[in-house]
Length: 387
Image 1 (tube, one colour):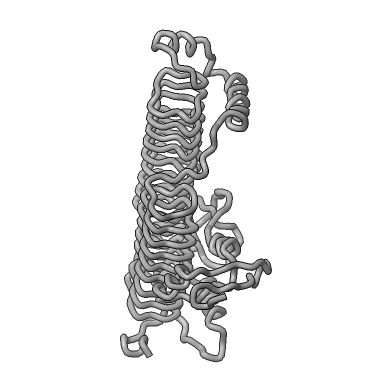
Image 2 (cartoon, helix red, strand yellow):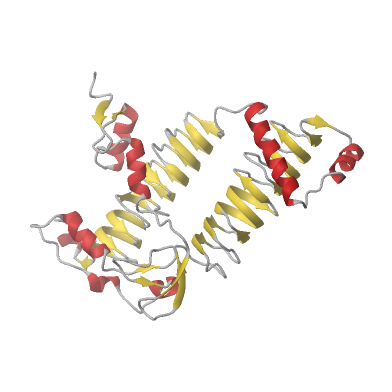
């Protein structure tokens, strides 16, 4: 084996073999992160361990006693403030700074800092009436939903962008007045559908595009007035649809069973759900170029091993990162540049950050905002920092 073109490794966690190819080695060098000692799946699990999943619960702010709703557990090793308090000037994360001790593990010192600095009860900004939500951005009047941006009147949903007046939506973009859809985009009044886009006034569609007034159909393109892939006149279609009691719960359940049967036996399943991709591999890719082993990312280029991203460039092992570039081994970093080993941050030229916003040249910091040349939440001069 030529070690200049690839490297074979054994995962330190699960013991499985994995390979780092030539292109990955080049990108690791460009981003300037260490080569992984864990396989891809174990790296993803490690990143996900920093994501805040949990049941919504009521609690109180450790700063003011104000009531709040959060997914963070009741028993924490760190204080919880309301989102408004966390962004306010009522406290200063620099007050928790510690001097670096070369005799102790740096990661242990960072952990100690993480357990002291307060965290916000909710991730997101610029929301109105979205108390029972998390990881929510620029949205209003949403309930029991997570991971969304620019949504309105959205309920019981997960990971949506620009979805309005809808319920039970999962990974859907630019849609309105829809119900129980997954991976459906640019649609209007679409119900109980999967992997479809540009559709309207339809029920139970699977892998269909630009369809209107269709019912229980699959693999259709540019069709109208179809039932189980049979095309009818408008009059025939309307007559048949009037016979269906779509307001009956039991009848809908029987239709779901029929839909599941169709997806198993009749649907021609695509190799992947990629669209407008060039020299890329993975699944659920949209408008990407030179992206490899990536999943559910859009408008990105030159990335490796990335999940759930938008507008990324030259990222590697970056999960849940948006509008970021040269980001490595990080999770949920939005708007960052040259971030390494970071979580929930939006900073530049920094490493080992947790919940740091608009910082530059910081190392091992937690909860800072618009700071520069800090280590473990302690301020240094440029010269001291670069030593």
